Image (cartoon, rainbow, N blue to C red; front, side, top):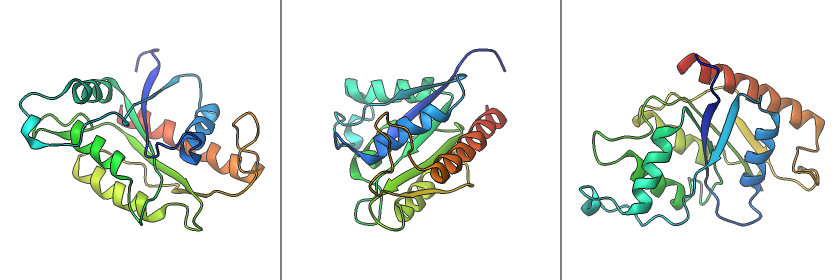
Length: 185
């Protein structure tokens, strides 16, 4: 492995300006070693996937595929909508993985995490996402699973995790994720 930074494409499955999942992504980045470089991938301006444009993708679809293709690893931070992954995230996955034979995700080590106001912390959405990623040949870190329950005081003013136990848990996740990336890179 070279001394170059490890490029991590971050896909946040929530578009809300004050998204808990965006905050979680930023907090995890604070815990990561400097060898990781995080790039948030824009997914809010993508057209709905349509097989008709498999021969000539719209510019935003091409951009998405290129950004995913250039990444060394993936970090999915997803909300849970109606017990599954948000449509905007599924749409981005469909665009970046198609047409057949041009899957931009294939072989890239990934992790799936999330935070939710629900007591299960987005567990159903994460399981659905893991099923999709398995089909797309994305080696996904299995443990630790990160289901964070959003409560008042979870995030400090500076965006870090305020609760020491949660911060230690997330640091353990980050350490395992970095090892996972290095093993699959």
